[in-house]
Image 1: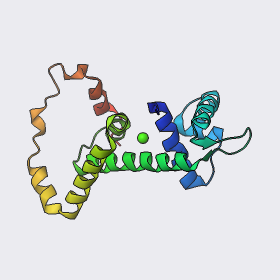
Image 2: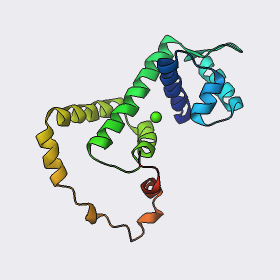
Image 3: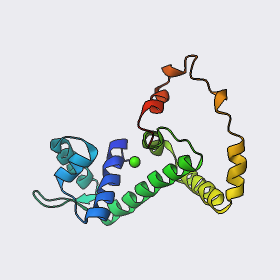
Image 4: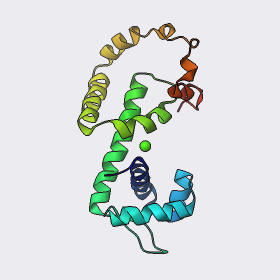
Length: 158
Ligand code: CA
């Protein structure tokens, strides 16, 4: 089974492969903001599990299986991002996606994808949804700042 960290690595390897055409340990270390030694360790693990091919001083390449998983992970990230943006979550979307993505099942992801498609194809329905928004129902006060997720409110909002 893939850990959250393995998923994050595979997602990033897939992204970098798509944009740059190749991935080196240093690229991953920079993109994920981790030490190159951590990348090397994780790449060995992903190699043993059959997701990547890697030889020392060479580029990191996804296996067919790794590419299939990577493609799904990027799609999942993008779909959740689209979904929260569509709902005008506005703040902390990126952080929330990074959390949610590891806990949602592929079938539920498909349901969310359907919602995104539905509201994109029916903007008037989206307007109805917007009319229901009552932000003042969730006050800043009380004990809400104790919640871990409340931190996202103060993050960069992207
Ligand atoms: Ca992600």
